[in-house]
Length: 362
Image 1: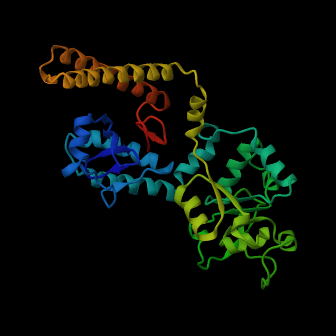
Image 2: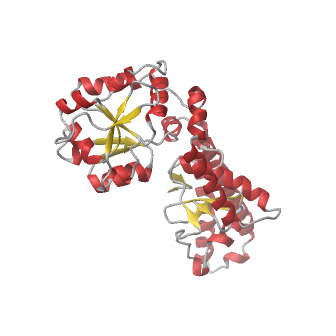
C-alpha cells in the first residue's frame, strides 16, 4: 500500500499490522512504524481513503518505484508527497495514452517479453480437445500482432498466430467490454500490420455469432461487448468460460461478478516463490527451525524459574538467575528474528514472500 501523505510504502499482514515499511527507499525501524501506524489504544488504521493506494497490479509497480525515488528527493524540500504521487500518476497515464511504452516494446520485444515454448502446444491442445480459445486484449491490432508473432517465433508479417484462436478481440476497452453498455464492434482487416477497421460485411447484421458469421467476417474484431463474444463462441452461460488474466480488477473481479466467468489470475512473482517452497531442505529453513527451538527453550527456562520461585514464596524479580535467563531469552528472540528475516529475503530482498507478512498472510 502506498501512503501518499507520509511518502511511505507499506506491507501489512491480514490484521492490517504494518510489518514492513519504507519511507522512499529507506526502511523504517519498528519504532518508526509503530509511531506512525499504531493509533491510540493500540488500534491500527483502516488504510482506506484518499491517502492510500493499493499496489495490486503490475502497472502500479511503476508508480511505486518512481514515487519512492521522488520521496528521497523531496525530503530535501519541495512539494508535498501527495502532490508528487499525483504528478507520477499523471505522467505514467500520459505514457500509456500516447503509446511510447508500447512503441519501445515493439522495437525490441525480446528486451521486455519472456517467450514460453509451451504456449503454442498448450493452445493447440486446447483446440484439439474441442475447446474454443479466444484472445481478449485492450491492445490494438498492430501491437498485438508484434507481441504474438514474437511469442510464436514468427516474423511480424506472419498471421499464423491467429489460427491458434477461434476469436480475437483487440482494443477491447476492458472493463467496459465486460459491461452492458452499447459499444459497436468492428471487424479488423489483418491485410496490413496496422489492421484496418471495417463494418461487418453482412449489412444489416441480423445475427452475430456462429460458424457462418465467422466464415464471412473473419475472426479478428475490435471493441464491442461480452454479448458479441458469447454469441461468436456459442456460449450459453458465463460459467462455461475460463478467463485467464493478470489484472485483478480489469480482468478478474469484473468478469467474475458481472458475467459469472471462471477466472485464473496470473501472478508471475509466485513462480520463483513456489520453487523455494518446494526446497524443503533449504538451509535457511533449518536455521529458522533451530532458532525457534532455542527461543522456545529460553522462554520455558524463564517461566520455569518464575513458577519455581512462586511455589517457594520467593520474588522472581529479586532472583540472581533472572537476569541471565532473561538475557538469554532476549538473545534467542533476536537470533530468531534475524533468521526469519534472512529467510524472507530469500523470497524478496525487501518485502519477503508475496502472500505472507511475518508469520501471517499478507
